[in-house]
Image 1 (cartoon, one colour):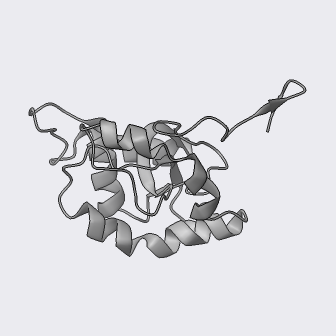
Image 2 (cartoon, one colour; image 1 turned 45 degrees about the horizontal axis):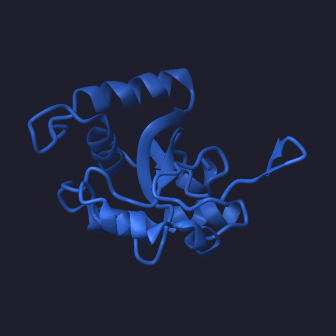
Length: 155
């Protein structure tokens, strides 16, 4: 993942939806990182169409707190609930996330996920996303069946 992301050492998990939704110029910034998104997926032999059948479009339509799910479905948006990388780089990334000047949500409260998006946009050399879903997949607004258990093993 790091190699396919031009060396960005801190890896966050992916999700179908941009949350929070009010991140200035997020669409353009995610479009700019599309080659990295595709490169990470290609490395692991997956593509967005592999995940598309599992996006719960009905849940997306009901949830008014976020922008609607990606269309077409894509595991392209950062979720700050999972991060991994070398300790020094994690510390550096989270220091930037903690102190980012555009981290406030619409209620004026600190939002770690918004800040993580902003730092990734500011520092693509530091933060990337596991858009392959190899390390982590956020299951918000996904249908049952993406993961299965057979003979006591997760597949």
